[in-house]
Image 1 (cartoon, rainbow, N blue to C red):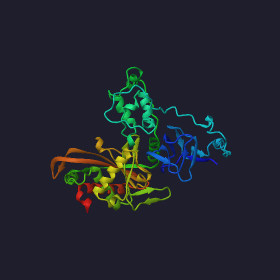
Image 2: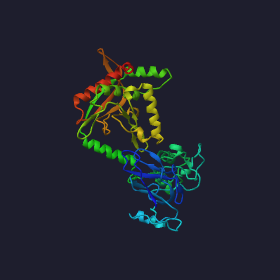
Image 3: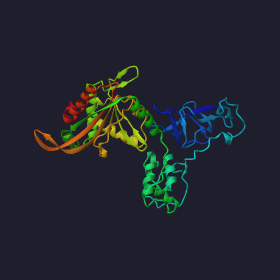
Image 4: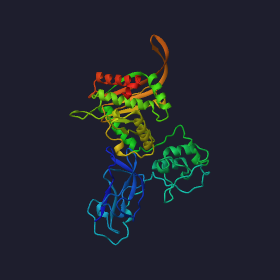
Length: 423
C-alpha cells in the first residue's frame, strides 16, 4: 500500500510551507534519513528528511518547487514501483500495484509559473570568486532570487551566493543587477532595471512575512498597548564597555548591556515577565529574552535563555552566534521558542527612538534607540552627554503603568551604574 507524506509542521507558528527545492525526483528509491526537500517555513529554510518507515519509490510529487501548500497537504507519495496512487489523490484508497513503471502524467501537479530555472546564456565576465553549483549542475538559488533574476535579466551563473552553502539570495541578485560586471545587456533586459515612475513591482510574500503580518496584527489589535519612555545617561556604560573591550578577551555591545540589564530587572519585577493566557495571567520564573534580528525576508527572534544568570561575555557570544545563524538560515525551532520578554534595538540604524509591537505571548517589549551626543545638565552645569532613549510597550491586560514604570527605571539604573551588572 502506498504511503502519503504530508507537508510537515516545522515550527509552532507554521501554517503553510514552500518547497524551496526537491532533492529527490520521481522514480527515486527513498530510504530512511534521505534528504527529500528543502522547506521554507515562516522562520527559515529547513531540510526535510524521510522519517523511519517512510520508504519506497517516489511515485508522486504533490507540491512543485516554489509552490505553497498548507500543513498536512500531500507533499509526496511513496510506494511500490508502478503502484496506482490515483485513489489517494482523489480521496479514496490506494489500488493494488499496477504494471506501469510510473504514475500517469495527469496525476502530477503543474509546475509553479513563478519558478524560473537557471539556464545557460552568454556568460558574464568571470567573477572574482567561485560560483557554487549543486551536484546536478544547477546554480543554487532561492525561488525568490530566481524570479527576481528573470525579471531583471541577470544571469545567475555569474553570481556568487552569500546564503547558506553558497545559495544565491534576493540581495545577491539586486547587487549583481547594479554591477557593471553582471548587469544585463542593453535592450528589454536593461529597461527592466530602470523602473518607470508610473509602474510597480509585485514581490511574492514569503512565509516569514505572512506570519509576521498575522501575529503582529493580532498582537496590535488584540492587546491594549501603552508606552513608557525614559532617557538613559550612557556615559558610564560607554566607559565600562570601552574598558572591557580594550582587554581584547571579549567584545561586548551596548545591546549586550541592555539584555543583561533587562534580565536582572525582570527578576525584580516578575509582573513584567508575564503573559496573558486568556483566562489567567502566567508569571514566568525563568527569564528568557528574545532578541530581534533582521534577516533578508523579515525578522527572527532567537531567545537567550536564563539571561539573568549569564555574564556579559556569554550573552555577547550567544547573540552573535544567533545573528550569524539567522543570516545563514540555520536557526532551529528550539532557538526561537519560549521567550518571556523581547528586546528590539534599532540604534545601530541611527534611529533615535521608536515604539515596538509586543511579541506574543510576552506582555512587554523594549524598543532601544541609538546613543545621541547631546548637552546635558550635571551639577548645575551644561556638559556633553551620551543619551539613549528606551520605550517599553506594555499589554495593559497584564501590566499597569506603575509596574511598567518601575521596571523601566530599574533597567535605566543598571545601565547608568554598569558595575551593578556584575554583582
